[in-house]
Length: 468
Image (cartoon, rainbow, N blue to C red; front, side, top):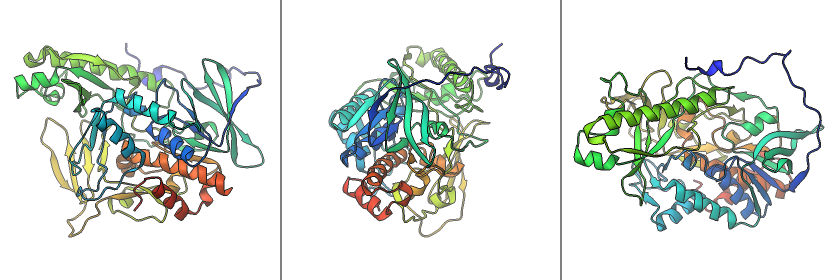
């Protein structure tokens, strides 16, 4: 009998606990800013802080940087432009890295008006580019294969003093003035004892995979597409969810396919991430069997699996401001805007196939390929619509600690707003803003929440960000 998530571990039992003895942990680094989580969001936070003169320690659990873009194999960033494709609203380090990859033939730009893709890249090449970007800054101390497992707090103030990490060398401590939680799950905030929000309905995770032979199969038989074969509603063995795929630039006939979905799991609960990882791979196996059973797809092969499942959503910090779907879709202006986006609200259903898209111009589409889209509106038509939305700095400032910022998936947003903000080109900007804010807070000897946001926005602009 296959285990379900709740079968892995029993509930905590007060009579069945292990009490660990107190221990002494050596401090291996003293720095200005400690960034926990080495996704692009975390790397960009570290670089922006280092460029302002801060000494930064960058802690990452994997053996390489990039997060979902590399370990998760998701090789697409969305448009850097507004919905009309006329104004560039995202720049900074996302644009710098994109330029590097394009120059190497490792990325391809799409029409800036494309609602689904802004740039496709080779995830392996991105790993190398991020290594080079970190190495180019003497002020960054990278710590790979390292996981944050604890914090110490100053008892008389609402501040973190050290992060405890474990790696192959043992248990170590990093002391810093400012901390940035770029773990995606709010791990550092949780270790510091802050309350975190977990929505009852969460965006489900997806295991991506790289296949060879898909393009050749589609060229041989125009009726053969991955979504028609893997998601065929007439086939009882078909997967039920949503599928999309993306060619890998510079590598003929290789595609990243995102076609699995593990519903009703919380990847931060006991056993559920393990279940999701294994279930996602089971679905990859079934996808390959379905492709190979089709005459045109008999030569399709599985080439690579991700280092981890692509987690869309777990915990959210409780910050000074929660971004709402209404604020995003109405293009609300904020005095503390630190980033922008134009990607639609994109909510994957966790209890049925398909997803819903909501657009800034009022359109709404329920998509469930290979079935036809169901098109409607979430609001009435207007003569003028917003063409991009804004991300406020306050959504990065958790309540309860003066020297902690969150960047990435753990930002404070309601379910609809998070459906848009969660994509990488948006979250990368939260990393840059957190890094700049941390460095400025140290320089001005103030808490991030007390920063002059005009100074923050101007410093972001001077560093290359497109702050409107």
